[in-house]
Picture 1 (cartoon, rainbow, N blue to C red):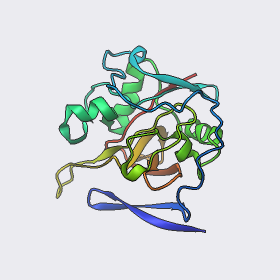
Picture 2 (cartoon, rainbow, N blue to C red):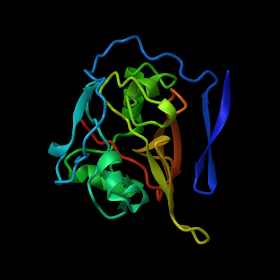
Picture 3 (cartoon, helix red, strand yellow):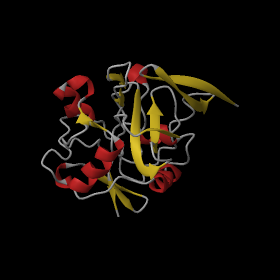
Amino acid sequence: MKFFTFAKFGRTLLLSAVAAVLWFGCGDGANPGGGGATTGGINNCGTDGTAGSCKTVPIGGKTWMAENLNYKTEDSWCYGDNPDSCAKYGRLYTWEAAKAACQSVGMSLPTNEEWDALVTVADGEEIAGKKLKSTSGWFSNGNGADDFGFSALPGGYLYPESPVDDAEFDGTGDIGYWWTATEFDGGYAYFRSMSFNSNYVLEYHHGKSYGFSVRCVKN
């Protein structure tokens, strides 16, 4: 059985299907990726213009960033325009900026298929959020087990400016959105989301001008 929850996108609503029973399990104690570490310290991922400053972890034959990218580029922001947020959550990027930023540090923005593979290794979309989320930093103790060392953190998002609305930030501590490199159509691209109140990793698409977090990947 599934029900629907609503996440605020500025003044819009994103409809997401989540499990009726939240917090289903915490994993079986396996730690195939050597994870489980509590996140902490300063996020310098990409600040020197290379991936060498980023924590990485091997999962499913790929090398994934184990923290959100913090490479400063055009069309990227610190949440709330606060540098301390970048030091904790990394930066928020438009879709085009996300692709360019990963290339700039010598990696690539993961495709929808690469995210599919990651979620499959983490036992599927219904439980992968629990296994990929960091062991601290999520609202209302909605932390994960971090079984793979992926250490997903809730960086929130930026709702872009429109003819009637100013740009605004929302969701830090509650939810994380990560761009994929896969387009839905000319104006939209796919992303993945994790929330403090769900074990799911959800797939959806949204406008490319939104500001989302980024994890880069390489073979």
